[in-house]
Length: 412
Picture 1 (cartoon, one colour):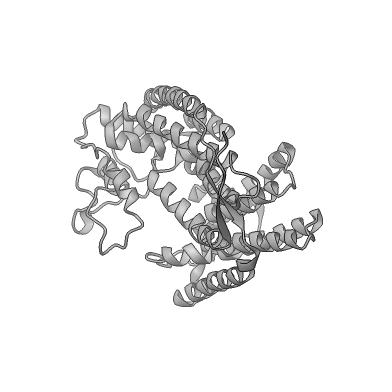
Picture 2 (cartoon, rainbow, N blue to C red):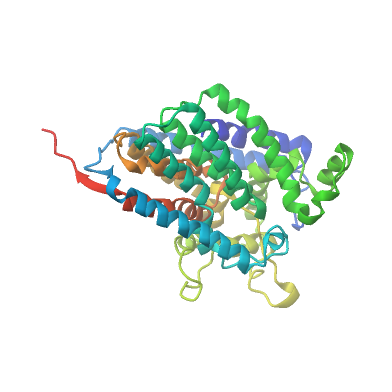
């Protein structure tokens, strides 16, 4: 989390100055972004001070769990078989429903309303990894070579299940889940290995960003020169990944500029957070709330842009991040408040998992929360809610079913 924060808050904003922070297809941008990058950085600094102060205070209040989830061998194999079958069949049904693998890889494929399938289908590689790992542990057959082979097989499956539809984050999330579980099982992953792993992962992010943009035309790349030309033309080169996919400094700076220059934007006053809480509800019963998408469209294109009729309708697809969303709701001073809440949430999440006994099956859920904690700065709250539920919901159900709840005796 600290390494990501250094890149996010320090290196990326500095790189925006020489490389250019201007946003595509957004009107009324400042001629010079530097004062507004500085304004955003100043309030982020205040927010980080609040984050660390609250996290330090919350770290001092530790509560040990009164109940633990103990592995239940008698239910394991039946639950595991059913869960894997449900997950695999959900993926098969999803691919058939959209018309096959070719349509899955097509950029034009409409995936709206498919979230429920992703909840089950994209959990398959990580779920298979955890189940086989437990099986090997039970039968005392878990060795480093076996674990590594299992890891590589399940990483390949993760690419098929999530990567083919162009989802880099879901693929990396599955890899991260498996790596953290492997580490928890005693196969320690050193800092050196993590640093080395950043090289192929960074290459994957850049190359697959271009694949996501081109899809069916990706096969036309037949040389390094054609790759470089296409990546620069589409903005899917290393600069686009670093500044656009990881950084949020430009959108934060633009938000400061719009708020300061009175473009008529009206604050959301917390409605985007309420919208994030309601994102899991079916659309037919979901209340009319000014979500992050609506509020960000109002900021970038003018009030009412999202709900306008015909060609006047404009919809924002940009992610504002923790600080940007705070400004959408409450302005500059929303940043310290939201960062303080984030500090408390991070402390309690970390404390909960660190104080779990090794035998508690809920340690298998930690990787899903860890991914959100690491990248909390550049996500909107709705992304955090959706990521946690989609990536851990089905696995949580499986862990619950293969565990017995045992109350610990109080210590006097």
